[in-house]
Length: 353
Image (cartoon, rainbow, N blue to C red; front, side, top):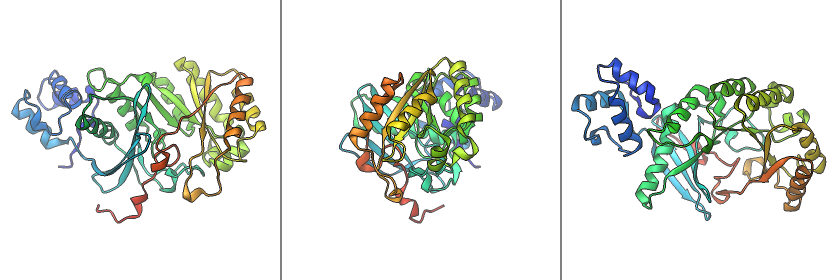
């Protein structure tokens, strides 16, 4: 029997599955608490669940399908985990420490087909989508690490910004959000979760209609079509005149502010005229611009990091033109764990499948 991850089921799906297999729906709460509150690593540890149900769960599901390949810790406390999936593929997950709590950046795909010219993640073409369970397991593995080192720390925030385009794995990503938000389990508040997309307009409409109340970030990175197409090939298929109405729909439907991510590339998109054009593009929309210093990637040597004075001038220009913005604090640059750096360098090693 080809088992699936128990973490891939929402509470409602687990309840329905138990009923379908001759058990009371109410038993789902016990199983759920053992998984997410007591964080067992085997079904046999569920001490107050009857043996028949333990056997049924064991026959159909697994709890751990990810294994830790390597772990690197940055000078700033950021930890990058390289996990091996059950098929031998490798993915990366990053734990970051902030003043407001512990945030985990999760991966949604093995590789990425978006192919942004400045991003390391797109160097590996998409092999497959991750299941919802594999995405949840990243959070659980990081939490188990925190449990083992002691101190009572818990994952409090999630960013869906790792390898892959989350909206290209839409259904699994949405199930993941429902699972981690559930108040009976991990109870991570929706306003503590941010999903990033390169701009899949149709999925933005669908996401808005779900009213999940999580934060949405758009990888914009350029104020016009010519420049955005040059650095983000997705703009050929979904130019700004398609993307901006989708953003407007999301803002109206969710009554939430949207984040626009903007990586500053030296002499490419970081000049004053670009800032003025960006301010004009945004207008009076409820948007926050997250200015991101470019992180070095060996394979993209055509790009360089903007000078600090240029970054500050860009920021000042936006502020003077009424745009709410900030400069992102970097995490894990020294271990290739920062924005745009995620990729599995070990991917070229032979993997057992």
